[in-house]
Length: 336
Image (cartoon, rainbow, N blue to C red):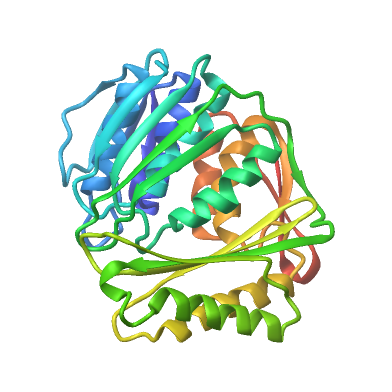
């Protein structure tokens, strides 16, 4: 039984611990879950993740509910198949899926997860980032999965519906030390139907195309779509493909923030990353760590975030090692 103090981390630490537990077969005891948060303990989205991973691995789990600050989780055998989970709030579907993806190397038959919740919500990558940046990058290294988006879900109602399909995979080392030559740029802009009259999706896309054009970046593909959603909301995602890597940048619309300002923020993020030696974006750096320790590899991240620090400490408890070396302009090269 591996003892984990959850005080220093948030939901990401819990999700990583569950993934490592299921992959290794080691039981975990986590206490002080999200202890440094204003609302400590499990929130609905975290509880959904615990229940899903327990179902997939036939785990024995201590009695937990919303607000619980301790968890015992003892996995058995991973059981591929079809699973359905309703987060019940606008909790992030993409973060739930992130917990499951590393199981690709441990399954012998396909695994599908149909989840309802928030597809495009704060503190998590947008579904377009997940679909068009993360999954294709992982596919380059032999992690095979696809996602079908039936309905978008924004804060506060959620209600998005998405299915992730994970296939048995034999990943290779994830070594990305050079970007390679630039290939294409794609823009994915979307909003709830309630914002169609204001042309929010089109305005976000148009402004981002203009900003990138000013920087000499051609846009090869763009979409501006509306979807039936229970709450008003919008998202904007830019995906830049290079020979060796894929960068993703995203933002959410907010009440009182013009669509053009949302686009300007994404453009600023693009400029900042392209001016650095990083070979993956910050979302990707945070989320690739578990794949690096499983299969080996090297990436250059924009920075060392708290997620990277706490996850590195967690992974060491499961016998994995992560090396962080400072290189050009203080950017970290992360190797396992």
